[in-house]
Image (cartoon, rainbow, N blue to C red; front, side, top):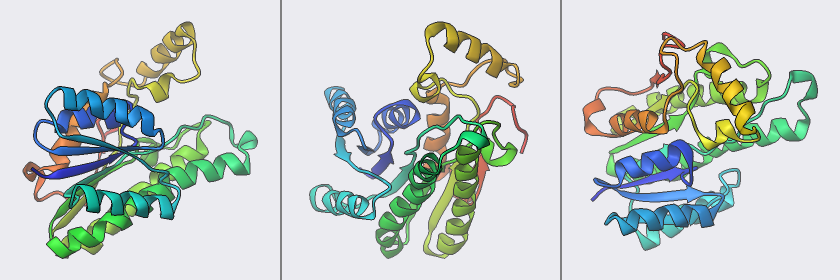
Length: 247
């Protein structure tokens, strides 16, 4: 059974993807919150799936290397990667501190780079592998009151295209997903129930389908991009966004 590594896997889209892939792959749920990742992995094991949890801080090369070395020693090769770890940021440009900017960029961009860099050598050796990087539709349209987040997601799409071109000769495909508004704990965070309802209604006004997406809908796309049905697709940013952006 092939193995997939998912970062940011303890909740939201990462967890939905782990659940989606678990019937056909061994899933490794990696997260900075190792306890939450283990709870999620335990639930998958209780349903008869092969699932493991591991703690990682994707901003740290040493932490990422320890993760990959542990997986190699205890589980084996990583056949697929969903680089999904990220944090949110909602501040006007004038109020974005250097620390906040650095945290967002390091988590998304540096983290995405370090994780892909760490798994690529074994994929090159096998001349096979598939990687999906979590970007956003903000990579295309920008984000009011979210400059750091939008900049990070744009950088990740550029990283995706570069990796796709560099590693296609080795049989490795690299794609990105750019979701629109998805109903996740990250989107709800910091809002009361009433505030969430107001925010949700405001967000859906820009979506032709007039609803938020569900994590499972993004997971279905990741499943497709990691698998053999997308064997001639690489270097692409695909938007599950209810028609919010046509690309």
